[in-house]
Image (cartoon, rainbow, N blue to C red):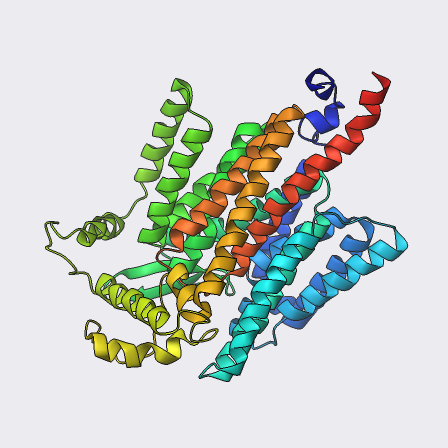
Length: 490
């Protein structure tokens, strides 16, 4: 059987070959993205939204992979929030998700498309949302709970749509490139902004800044918050490394290197300590998955030295405050006010869970209870609602033990999907997609590290990666189905 597996057609055993139109199209997409951002005032924002919607419809109906790439890019660039905050438009996220659902139904009816692998994750995500909906009956702030539930349902549907649209290895690869092209777009704008000092220009909302007296100016991208911006960017680094490893085309490999550098620099310029730890964890995980040879080590050191030239002194000082977590550090404990505040937020979340261990205080209701608990604790002098700054404690506080168990189960099952896909692709002789499956796991683990320091404010980016991870095994199944007739002949 193993010998037969090696007889797969070239287009399934190796990454899809790059046609003569692929590179011009990729460069055109990047140019159009930057061009559109710079000419919004000329064509009008509503016209821009209409054009995006029309292209998405035509792309999905004529070429599902093109529609998938556009859908992922629109979601990951946070276009809906940019249009709301910068131009006062209503949200396009929910209509966009509904539109993609309709287009999938149309393709199923007209083109007889088959969608595999989405039922189990849909059931799991449905159970998780059902559990959250129960909190509407007892949450102190009903509107907060309802809005949180609606946002989660939208993100769950996004994940299921991605799973349904990625049925072939080529689709998975293109979805990854959609993420990296988005990373190039956001990262390039942010790096230009940092290196030129053009902090007054937010590039029409796609390169925002955050300024404070303690940390100075930090990149915030289209998210508007430097820590969460770092979180969604650091997720892309393992995927960029994968494409550097496995792309055969020198131009695509160069694009992947471009993505790696601008995304890494962007993470650095956000000054996010959690993202720094996640980056270290990702590099360790990748080194374990693929122990580097001496030339790779030397190349990595050269890249590190190059990136180090751009590292601000403020960033090095901020990273050094991580030592404040240790009681015997040179600073003698919690000196950094943000660390002190987060300690309070974490302890409060734990106390909320202990008081409401079964179902929690209700979706989105941590903020509503924080000040009451914080006063009793006496660590945080701030008298305002705060977020948990720890995803796991937030879930436990708001959803109780059942919610925490369900979320953990979804994460574990998602990681199992990547392991399953990696094993299947190795058996099929497709090393490139085996590596990609493994590094999807690295992206998920990277998010889980950042989640130790951040709450669930922008979860949809995580669910996009989850969608890709659940898609990987069905892509391997597709390759196996294609290969079976070959086995029968041999």
